Amino acid sequence: MIGALDLDDGGGYLSRAGWRVFDEAKRRGAYLRPQGDVVYVTPSIDVPLADLDRLLAIVEESVEAVLCR
Image (cartoon, rainbow, N blue to C red; front, side, top):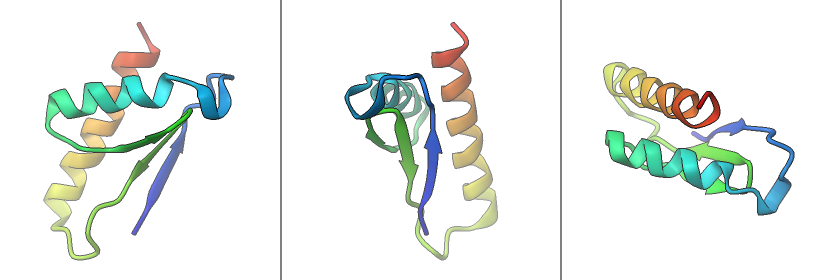
């Protein structure tokens, strides 16, 4: 399972937006895969729903923290 979030900050592949979200998510306890202005989430296929909900909440919180500053 792979989820991708396009941050679309206009920087494309060389954008640092994904890395800023990665750093914020890591600080909150989640590990994401940044690639330019896209952030990938790759939980295991059998992830418990409560863990998936928490992971996605961290992604949301991290994006808001980075892009809404």
